[in-house]
Image (tube, rainbow, N blue to C red; front, side):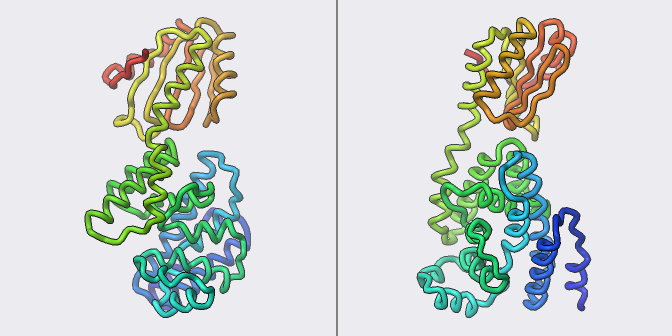
Length: 319
C-alpha cells in the first residue's frame, strides 16, 4: 500500500452506524485506490466530510430522513469521480441514456452517470439514494430532503475552504433551504464569470429555490402577527445578519402575564416548526432557526437587560 492509500485508510470515521456503512466506505476506498488518481486522497477525505456534514444537518433540523440512507448516499456520492471518458460512454450506451449527456460538462458526469455505476457495482437499488447521488452536483428543482442535504453538504463540508463556502456554511446553520439558494446563486455566478457551460438543471434549481432567500422576512411578519394576538408590548426587532452566525433576526417582546406568554408559545407551536423552546420563570426563548424570539415579563426584561446587549445593533421598523 503506497503512502496516499495509507493516508486514506488511516481516516477514522466516528459516525459509522453499522457494518453496511463500513462496507461501503471500504468499497469507496477500493475504487479510489484502483484509480491511482493523484487527487484520490482529497476526494476520499471530502466524501467523509460530506457524510459528517449531512448527519449534522439532519440532526440540526430534525429531518425525517433515514440516517443510514444519508450515510450511504454521502459516502458514495463521488464513487464514479475517477471513471474514464470511455467508462462513462459505456454507461450511456449500456443503459440507453441520451447521448447528449456526454455533451454537457464532464464535471457533472460522475454525478449524472455515477448512480448507474453505484447500482451495478454495489447492488444498490434504492431510488432515494441513487437520486441523491445523481443530482448532487447540478441540483434540480423540488429536491427531496435527502437530495437537498447531500447537495448542500457536498458544498459546505469542512474541507472546503473559501469565503463563499464559509458564507453558505453559516447560512446553513440558520436556514438550509436559503443556504441552497445562495449556493446555487454563487455557483451560477462563478460559472458565468468564467464562460463555462451551465447545466440547465442548475438553472431550474435556482429558479425554484431563489424564493427561499426572501422567506425570512415573510416568516418574521407571521411571527409578529401571531404573538400580537397575545397582547405583547414593546416589540423590538434586531437585525443581527452581520453580527451572528446563528440567526438573522432577534425579536424581544414583553408579555403582560405568564398565561399570555404561554398562550403565545402555543399559538407559535401551531403555526411554525420550532427548532427549540427554552423557558425560565419569567422568560421564554423560541428558536425558529433564522429567527430567535425572546419573550419576557416586564420585570424580567429589565433584569436580564437583553436590549442593552444589542444597543449598537440595527433595528427593523415594527409597524
